[in-house]
Amino acid sequence: MRRIHVLFGLLTAVAAGAFCQSNEFIDRLLESDSMTTGQAAYLVLVASDNLGEDADEARAFELLENFGWVPRGATIDAPILIKDYSYLLMKAFGLNGGMLYAMFPGPRYAYRQLVASLVIQGRSDPDMTLSGSFAVRILGRVFDVKGISQ
Image (cartoon, rainbow, N blue to C red):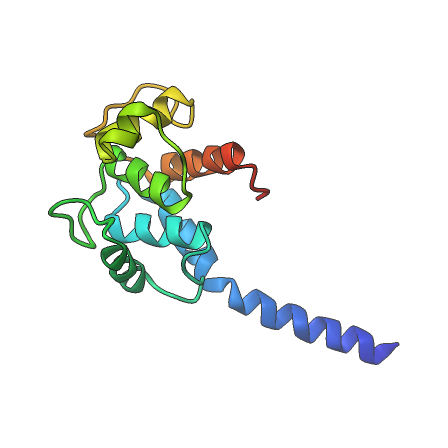
């Protein structure tokens, strides 16, 4: 019986270390007033299972470039606009948009779709930057729309 307790304790310690980077990232993100494109890439790509938690923001941004989802003129450290974050969410989670998004898939109509479906709530503007906590709340509502358990 004692071996089982020791094994369980060892596995718990290993698992806690595996999530350490992710926890530090979330803590930094929740404290930030303006989320960067690199942070958005990491958050959304990990949440949508397109990237492992052991990656970093640079790898996430690189993958975003490979997918062709990087906002026009964006750099890894540039603040991301809410419309570009909306587009990233729509693409990463395969969300269906309305007629205009289907005809002209892009940040403008992705933002409008997420507002219409109440994923983005409250006062917002498509060209505003967003805080880390606001981005996480929006991501949580995407999980609700997709039926993903957190």
